[in-house]
Length: 124
Image: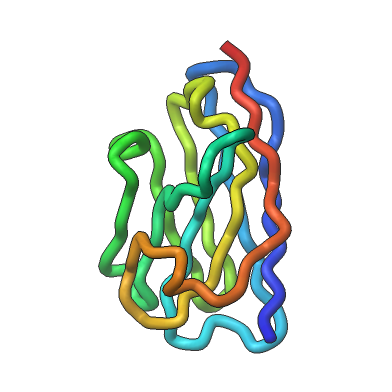
């Protein structure tokens, strides 16, 4: 079983930046994709960005394209989400997830382990 611990969330003004990190421990980083999802109050969980095992392929939801960047360091068992030009609508709890397959995917059913989440609040 893998444990995923997110960090880097917080309160930021609109237009600002945050960098989320997700450190994996236990049965770590087998050859699978990693992803970031988010859930705002009263809304369904949404896939924000995912990255393949190799890092060669990524997926971004349209609303964050050009502003967010997902990356991973397999040697450190860590995945990152750099968030720039933040908007109030980015406010949510952000969750890190470990995929079941090597390819990047937007489908939450293809992710098997989840972190506890980190709150990101963007003030307008």
